[in-house]
Length: 115
Image 1 (spheres, one colour):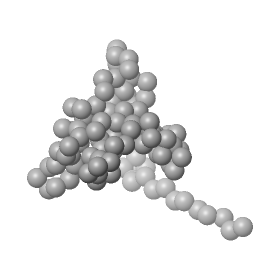
Image 2 (cartoon, one colour):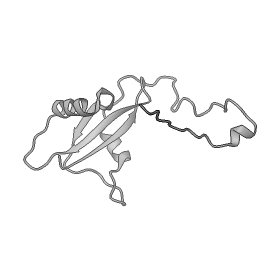
Image 3 (cartoon, helix red, strand yellow):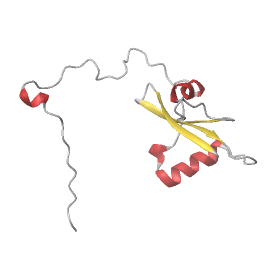
Image 4 (cartoon, one colour):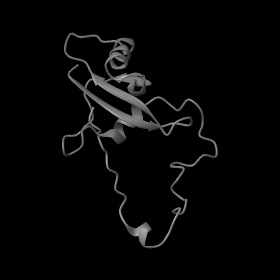
């Protein structure tokens, strides 16, 4: 591969599905099945793209980064129509608590126990 970009596309069953855009190296002819198998073997099924599109060049922003908005135009349509579900589901829900603790930032610590 010469270039690749991975991006999420809204989906009815999950919040997003993984899609990939690939620019093959000159003379190479990768297949979607081969790339999917490679990702599954190295990273796991969770990271496997549900759709791979092959392009001549990635669309870039003015900053030189992959333009994910334009890449989503190449994405496959959702498997099921979203129906009455809203995206994201939690956007219009009030916080579960109020008071001084609600204004404090959430802090998560990861602790590793020695073996």
